[in-house]
Image 1 (cartoon, helix red, strand yellow):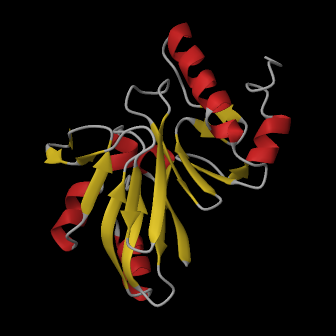
Image 2 (tube, helix red, strand yellow):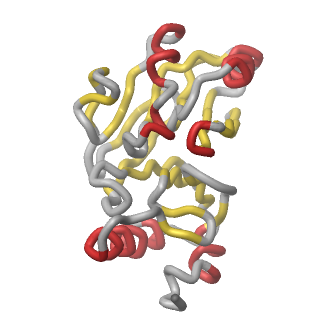
Amino acid sequence: MKFFTHFSIVGFSNSYILGPDEGGDAVLIDPGIFDVKLLQLIEKNRLYIKYILITHAHLAHVKGIKTILKIYDARIYSYRDSILDIPTNKVRELDKIKAGEFIFDVYETPGHSSDSLIYVMQHFIFTGDTLTAGLLGSTDTGYARGLILSSIRKKILTFDDSFFVFPGHGPPSKIEIERKTNPYLNDKL
C-alpha cells in the first residue's frame, strides 16, 4: 500500500491518499485543495483518484473536489446528499466502503459538525476534525461538546492503542497517546 499526506494551506488541513503499491485506483480523503503538488504526487505514483471520502463538509476539507472531478472520475462518499452542489454517495454508521483494494468502516461522530464521520481502515483512523493530536474538534455549544466527547469515548477510544489517528488538522497521533495525554479526554481541563 502507498500512503501519502498532503498539507493544504486552505484551512491548514490534511488530505490523505491511499493506493496500491503498483499504482491504480486510489482513495483521497478530505481534499481541502487540489494543487500542482498534489497532482504531481498522484501522477508520479501512477495513481488514479477513484474514491473521495469526506469526513465533514467544511470548506477546508472539500474545496478541491470540483477541480479533482475535472481530472478524475471519482465517487464521493459523505454523510450529506451533496457537497458543493455535487451529488455524493451517502454513508451512515457501520456502513462499509469498498474502495478498490481497501475497505473502510464508517462511524458517525457528531459534535464538531452534524455530518462528522470517521473512516477506519486496518489500523488507520481518519478522524477529520473530531479528534486531533492533543485536542478535540471545535464546538459551538456545550451540547455539541458533549456529543463530540461521547463520540470519541464510545467510538474512537474503543480501538486498540496501536491504531494510528490521522486528523483533519495537525500531526498524526495514536490512540495510546490520546488516551494517556489528551487533557480533554482525561477530564484535566
